[in-house]
Image 1 (cartoon, rainbow, N blue to C red):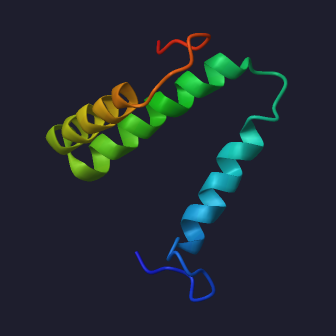
Image 2 (cartoon, rainbow, N blue to C red):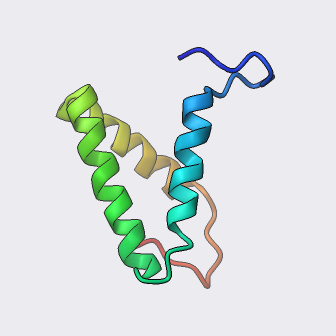
Amino acid sequence: MAGNSDDPFGVPEDFIRAIAVVRAMWNNDDVPERALAWAMVVEAVNRLAALNGPVSTSRLLARLGEAVGETSTPSSLTLQ
């Protein structure tokens, strides 16, 4: 993916637009935030598996799980 020439970090313009769409969905008061988050996770995993295959996606998710587990979590928060 090529980055936007104005962006020093090389974040692709289409990625920025996609993030804006996702963030706009959080403002939908008709859907509970937890349900929306789970729907996004399920759809993301489904898309990743379709694009990269299930084995690559499972490896990516395993690395993500390890990274989340390595971060310190305040005692008031739990991973579910």
